[in-house]
Amino acid sequence: MAYHMVLAWQRMPSWMNAAGYRHVEVFMVPFPDTGFLEKSRIFYTSYMGESFSMNLLKVRRPAADWSLLAIPLSCEEYENAQNYLGRLRDAKVHYNYADLAMVLAPKFLVQSLMPDVEPGCIPSHVFCSQAALLVLKNALMQKDRSDRLPEILAGVNSRTCTPNRLYRILQQSGAAVQGDVESFFETGHVPLTE
Image 1 (tube, one colour):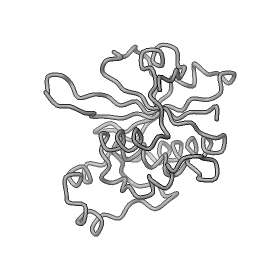
Image 2 (cartoon, rainbow, N blue to C red):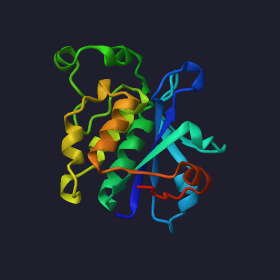
Image 3 (tube, rainbow, N blue to C red):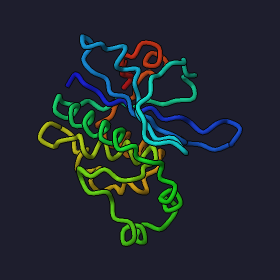
Image 4 (tube, rainbow, N blue to C red):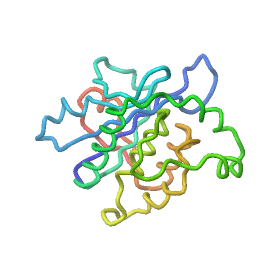
């Protein structure tokens, strides 16, 4: 699998004295011979107060503030992800403030009151980690994978999935590989550090 979805997690600022992540962005990394550097500088995310968007990475980011996980994709999975990201962007999906409060609710309450977004559907609102999880759920195909990631993600409710939780799930799944942050932000390549 030569394609990758790279998820970049932004750490909590040091002044907050809090561990973990506050934000996640999705980068789609194509084959090197298809405008690699240019295309790998595009990322998708949902910022507070804005619609879901496609953005160009223009400034060098401090590597110490970020963590990367790279998920290998088949050609079909890559196309599925690009398609779903485009649909989110074209629908101008708004930021999901309402579900943010529910990330603290007990699981039994969430399960009964907040059904997850149906596969293939575009919600009217998303927050950053919700969007990343929905892209993964709509892209990954069990027939193309040697891991259980699609099955694992199917059991996660996107409406209450925080950046920290998504990071832990992907890291523990064995399907995602650590990426070298500095090199990725500098070159657009996905050097894996395993």
